[in-house]
Length: 398
Image (tube, rainbow, N blue to C red; front, side, top):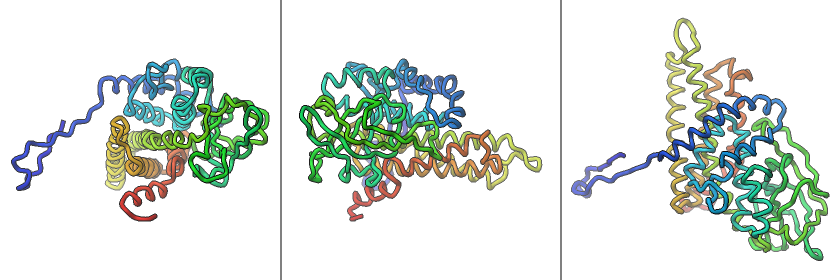
C-alpha cells in the first residue's frame, strides 16, 4: 500500500491518495501451481519440441486436469472461474518456461474456444467447448490470410449457401495448432459487402475433405505447430455456423482485444526468462579475476533490463486489472502490448550480448527466447499497428 500526497497549494489540505495493488493468496497459488508444473513436467520437453518442431499433444490433457484451459471461463460452464490477472499469471509462467508451449495454450484456450463459449449454440458448446476445456480436443482459430493478414474486413475466404448448409473456399496463413487440431474456427465472408455483418465463423472438424495443410517451419516458437491452410470446396452443414447465425464479427474483435493484454503477459515471461539467465551468467562468468557483472558495462546493461521488466510488469497487470473492471479500451491495450513486446525483444537481445559467444549456443536459452520474442512484435498486431492505435487516440489521423 502506497500513500501519495502531492504538496501543492491546491492539494495540501486533501488526504493522501491511496494506490493499492497486490496479488491475492489465490493469485500466488496459481503462480506456484504453474511454476511447479512447468519445472517438473514441461521444461524436460522443451529441447525436443524445439528440435523436432513438434508439439507434445499429451500436454493438453494435463492442462485440462489442472484447470488451466478454463482459467477465463465461469465455473458454471466448467471453467476455473478466475480473473484476467490469473490468466496473465498463467501466461507469464508458461512463457518463462517456453513461449512455444504458451502459444499453443493461448491459441486453444482463448482464440479457439472462446467464441464458442461466447456465441455457440448449446449443441456446439457440448460438442466442442466442453471436451476442449478438458484437453480432450485441440482447437485452432483460422483468421489470418495470405493477402490480408489479420485484417478482418479484407477477408477473402468465402462461405456460399448450399441446400442445407454452406461451402467454404479460401486460404488461411499462420494458423497456430492447425496441424494438431481436432477442430478449427474459420472466419469467412458470407456476404459480398464490406460490413461486419458479412463476416461469420464456422466450426470445421478435422481432418476434413477439402482442407489441406502445409506445416510451416519457423525461426521462433518452433515447438508450436503452425500451418498454411487451403480450403477448397469444403461442404459444411448448417450446424457448423457458429451460433447458428451470420455476422459474428464482434465476437472476433472481442477475442482479439483482450488477447493483446494476454500476449503482453507472454512477453513479460520471456523477458524475465532472458534476464534471469543473463543475471546468473553474469554472476558465474569470471574474466580477469572478476565476475562480468562487476564490470560497469555489463552491470548497466543488467540494470536497464531490470528496469524494463519492472515497467512492463506494472503495465501488464494494470491492463489485466482494467479487463477485470470492464474498462479496457483499445489504446490502453495497444500501450500494454507495445511496451511489453518491445521490452522482451530488447531484454533478450541484451541477454545474448551479456553471454557473448555462449549466447549463440543452444546449450543456453537466450537465443531461443530472442527468436520467440521477435514473433510478438509482429503477432497480435505489429508494434507499428499499436502505435497507430495510440496515435489515433491522441487525435491524429494515422
